[in-house]
Image 1 (cartoon, rainbow over the protein chains, first blue to last red):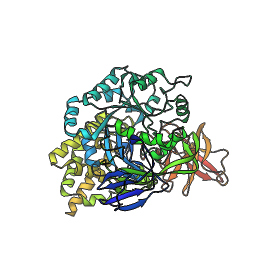
Image 2 (cartoon, chains in turn purple, orange; image 1 turned 60 degrees about the vertical axis):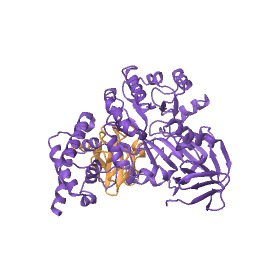
Image 3 (cartoon, rainbow over the protein chains, first blue to last red; image 1 turned 90 degrees about the vertical axis):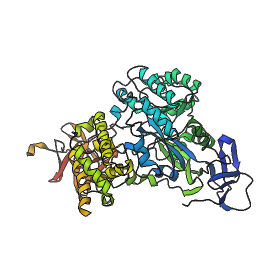
Image 4 (tube, each protein chain N blue to C red; image 1 turned 60 degrees about the horizontal axis):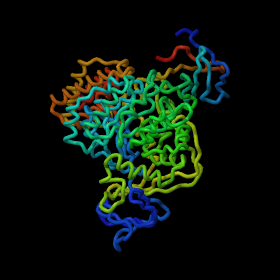
Length: 501
Length: 109
């Protein structure tokens, strides 16, 4: 991979840019990281032959998890290495943790990363049995939100929420109210939370969402789905679609059922958007990649053009990114995906392990990100070090040797502060969110007292425990460690270094 | 732990049975796995969403077991979670004795 500022002429590919109605073999010229021309190519430039391939605007995955308890050590492995030039982390951070998200993720990926901020101030916590708990979702610091949006609105592309209540329409109206206040689309998860005991109310959301809001996990096979008992699309969902609400695949690890999808498609209920919901818990199957989810959609009867439309122009519009993505218009960033339709015999699993076979699949070959060429490697994400968050239990990771004196002082002070906080296995088993917030606040107090910037403070904590660079909300991260072990390790990381100086 | 806590696993032949194998232990369905270091048992389904652990994958030299449905991974020594805090797998000690397998009725703590 190399940065490219010269002129490159991508020749011979079948260009598919549904936003511009382009669907033919034509040259694409890029220069200085931007699309220069389609068709009329200059005489001078590096020629790259992509005959036999398709070429589209860089794919946009509107729903992934690269940060937080579901995230990856190598976030680009599900981005540019899989043909995805832009993605949105769906809920990894909320208003109280966006600064941690920014500190750890900015500059870390070649793939352009945005955030779909979560309704809960802590962000996603990722334990099924509490995730949709309305009481943890309706603590809404509106002033803090407004202040944040004034300074960094570009980062945030939607407001994510679990569309689950148990309290009627009220909570849904609060979610929608905040989204309206912030002028963001609401991105509503309907899916496995509906497996929770007593959680038999997911339909309220359809009465609240408007044009431009997005429902994800369209074809989930859990309770409160798309279909009524006779297999027909629920009227409330048809009404929402008529109003302009967008429907997203959000394949996930729980939330795609062949049976539901096939029945819906037979009634012409197709997705407006295709996203993967890639995370630690589905990347080695059944989701694998956005390309795999696109292949799944082709197996449902959609054409190549149909699926490309949904990961380019449709995604860019839904995220208000049409000024910078989803199109090969001259002047746009040179975000491009070169791919092939492979023939063969492929098995496609849904999230309940039902299999459909198909004879063609989409395989990304080359990604251009702002003109920089990256060879795709769709298997890179499968590396266990990328998705299995393991604690270095026996000894501190080597990274502790490189801590600065300030980081050591910080860790020593943090160990001291946390020795005043009690938590145990039960705190994790029942996900004591209040305790996670207490740890989060303790971290912040110490950081302020030591006067250390956020990124080296967070890095010092993560690197004291992890061999691979996973990231998450620090309060949750600490809560998940056994207390005695956490305190001992923080002290060890701090003191060993102090002896070395 | 007294001997009465161990129960012979009927129908399992350590030499000829293909592992993982289903077994019954005190009326609970369990799954028996074989690693290079011996045998162990687990509850039959993942504590997360009850996917069968007959399709589970052993990794890290058999020190971890991963449910194939959602990658929830547990330590085989004690069933503690590796990547899924809040979930715990019941793991049973299994030993080979006189050409048969015995499992301990109480799960490893």
